[in-house]
Image 1 (cartoon, rainbow, N blue to C red):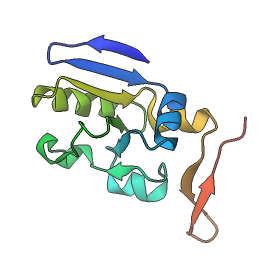
Image 2 (cartoon, one colour; image 1 turned 180 degrees about the vertical axis):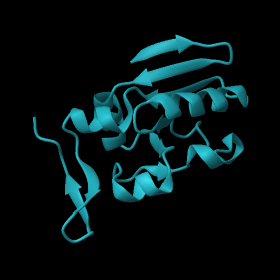
Image 3 (cartoon, one colour; image 1 turned 180 degrees about the horizontal axis):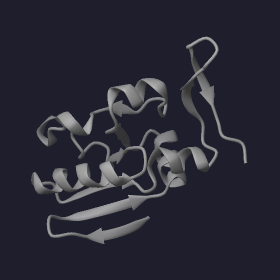
Length: 127
């Protein structure tokens, strides 16, 4: 994990492996800030959706029970949302560096859409 000290607070940049390990242990809240359309097509199973375009920091889960980790497609939007969250008064937040693309590149499982049937299908990129 890389830690960045910003003007608003501490921004943690987690790797997909770190996120997968913590999420697998149910020790974080993973929040996807992509659009509903992106989320419907493919997503990390169990992640919550809070799209960037409607993001409201005061409506996020309580981070005192479990840390929040934001993610998006590439890490750009989740970093911006994390900065918004810090500007709202929180002193520490995390996001997944590289986003969902890095998650898939790491060979981690996700829920995608079967193109033949349109049904949800667990997927994993092979190396």
